[in-house]
Image (cartoon, rainbow, N blue to C red; front, side, top):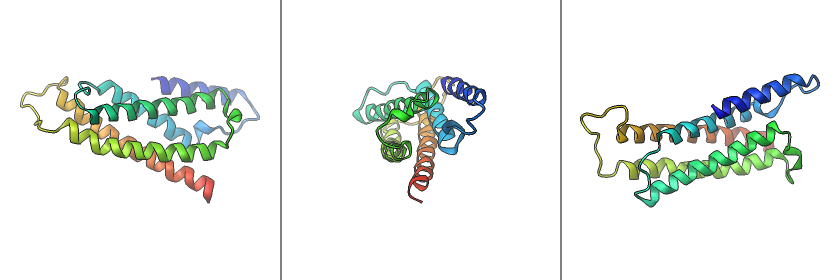
Length: 161
């Protein structure tokens, strides 16, 4: 919901400026940032019972850190504050996307390992079943890993090719 509002605001601002033809959030990396933040919001809505092991706590830290940085990139883009950064945005994005990819790679491995360890799906498993929520987080983590990997490849090609 927040990502949609941010994107709608950015599109409205870019349409209001006749000289500004294209902006970051309307490009492929910008759309990927909005998607990554949206998937993180979905992950947060499913998180429940993760405080039992350090592995699951690490995964929640990965989701939180990547969401905050992605949201800051979106906000700085909308606020047109990117010119104040000491390095070009493209190089910052390559570094961040590489780090986020590695962090999500660890979460993709650790989340199923620790959340399904010694746990089978209960026979009557309703919509609020913890097992189903953890399965949803697993798939959403994989989706975000794919999004961050595409984002990394695309931003690397923009900078180095």
